[in-house]
Image 1 (spheres, rainbow, N blue to C red):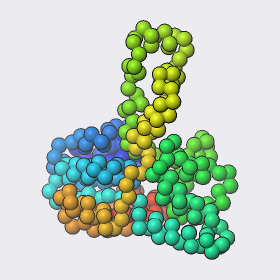
Image 2 (cartoon, helix red, strand yellow):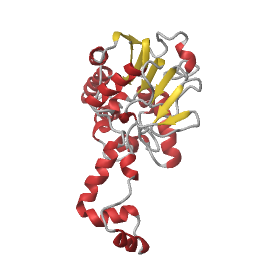
Image 3 (tube, one colour):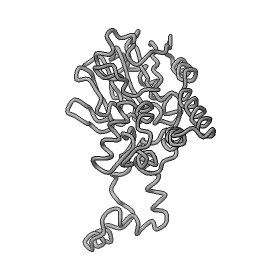
Image 4 (cartoon, one colour):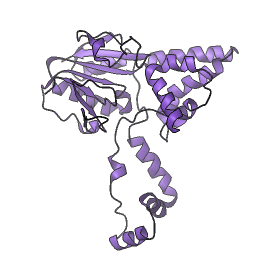
Amino acid sequence: MKSYLNLGCGTRFHPAWTNLDFEAAAPGVLAHDLRRGIPFPADTFEFAYHSHVLEHFPREGARRLLAECRRVLRPGGVVRVVVPDLEDLAAAYLETLGRAAAGEAGWGDNYEYVMLELYDQTVRERPGGEMGAYLRQRDLPNRSFVLDRGGVDALGIIEAARRNGGGGERQAGGGPEERRPLAALPRRALGRLRRAGFGREALLRLILGEDYEALRVGRFRRRGEPHLWMYDRYSLPKLLTEVGFESPRLFGPAESRVPNWAAFGLDTEPDGTVYKPHSLYVEAVK
């Protein structure tokens, strides 16, 4: 068993680690829904890491995930949690608000983007939300500001959106509800409707009528893309302590209790560029 664990890794993982995500992006990634816990025995790993995962869980779900991290770590093991920094985002909101309200050129666009960071990622009801639409603009009016806020990750989203017409964040949670078989009709009636050309979603619309939209939004919200809670330099160390970790400490993206951390290429690129700037990096010890 590889003794370093990366949870919710997406496409950013190290082959020498044990890597988990809801959907396996590569042969070296194990598919698992973290809402069901971490599928390993207690005292298995020396180090557990997750980046921009915790904010996609509701508060109690986040507490359970951190408690699971502690369970699977060996005594003296370290957890590293990376999340969007609420304090930094609040400061960006206040700065862009003040400069936009003062009429400074270009700061209205910056204000709009920060509001998307602050709210769209929480309230969106469709993949990508309004941020996806913003990033799909042919001529992004404040590209340098957006890339400063979002770093390498934002650049990838912009380029992917332009290639395939989509936008938004990597999904980070649930999903099984969308694959459950339709069982609301007797088998014969269901078979007749399918033979008549009704697909699964058409059948759901037929059965649910105006309630179909509530189902669609609920399924999307449970897939894990929206942000469900946010953290700062006070609340995240406090939460880690409450679930039993000790000595919580803030780090930079290239710093860690793990020697030569930057060599793993998880929070930084080989040239030192930060993957997700304006993040909060906290480690604590079991």
